[in-house]
Image (cartoon, rainbow, N blue to C red; front, side):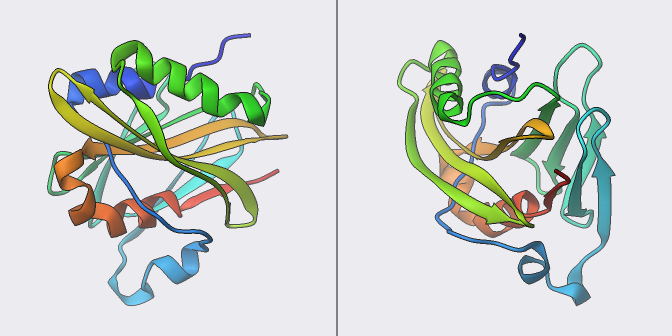
Length: 183
């Protein structure tokens, strides 16, 4: 069984990045004001999910064919990113935190989980984690939604440098809340 939880952390090495938030329960319709959105969506190829996002804020690209990343997002302002990795393999939800943290520590030894909770998003439960660390002297924070269930495993992770997280907190949460998983 191949679990691809390292890619988000390797992306930080290349993009010098991460992100944060502190919320408890979201539904996409409440997060995105209807009159201000240029709505777009992308769907998973192997796992049944959709990402609804505001294309006036985010540029979406297909992940590179030599990576496990299915889609990548870059904020229109730059320096703020997101990626999604989805696979059909269902792993133990309890192990997810430890796997993600271990992989983060392989590139940022000081990486720590600074926030974690279960959250209901568009009808499914996701694990929410924020992981802070330092890569090449750059403080970063990942803010991600992790789904494990009958559809497989989905990691939807936003990231930027720690000094930018508060400025983009609302946009990051709005993007993450666009995750819709069909179980």
